[in-house]
Length: 88
Image (cartoon, rainbow, N blue to C red; front, top):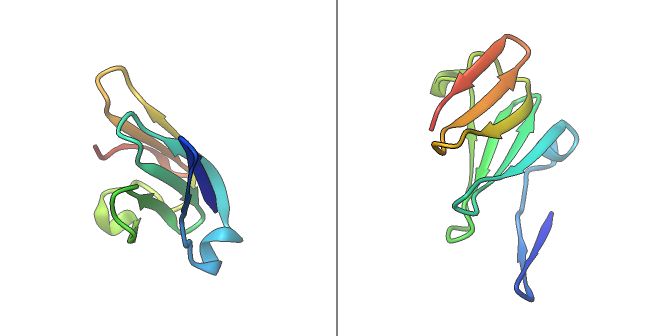
């Protein structure tokens, strides 16, 4: 996946297992890109090349993330097949 921000192309090297299981994509107010999948949620910070996978071990109610939403107070909510989680 690639993002074009102000003429600069930035590549997000998601693992192959993530690409085949993606359900949603969300950019928060800081520019962090979140990818909801069947395996959890992948976090991609523009200033770092690493991609982190967050799962039930990290506090998600379930690993199938169907939607991501940011509240007005900048909390991130993740809708899973087992309910909603607020992690940040």
